Image (cartoon, rainbow, N blue to C red):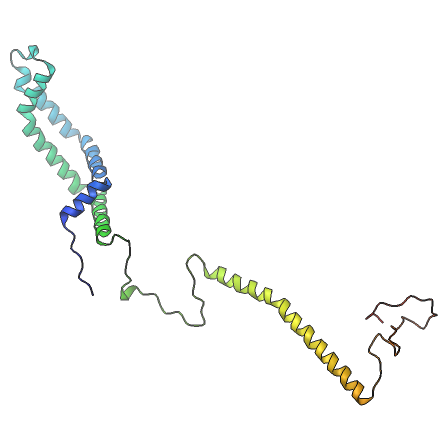
Length: 215
């Protein structure tokens, strides 16, 4: 057995970013974070109580200067609250936990087996199929297989009928030959000694001949 390849955490994270899975999960977490009403109220209150916004001369500052002053004052405290909110979502929200787990596992499997080949273990092998049972090919069901067998049987019937006809002709020929050897010159049914066909009755010569084989 070959040694299992080791996939590093950096490779998994890089694959997550390249495939867009990282951004998709991040957006879902941010969406849930914005729904946190308590966090929104705390950030709003911190801005209102900010000294940079309430000190003398704040009204003379440009919007950019005011925003930078507020950021410098409350950014650290606000970022701590945001980080706590993010981890709370990741750890408590079952939908996000499941999505992260399944996505990471899927990416890991792709890196471990890029071609998508999954070897069958001894416990997953299919039961043996006897020689008398048909093996179902990919894309076909046993029902279709059975139907095909019936179709083949029907298609073989004309050949069987042809064989029966040949056997009848062979018996007739053998019977005729034996009759000639025994001295029996009786004509076959429907024929006279002169090779003329029998007529339906003993009528006169004006009666029409009966088709061969109907005498």
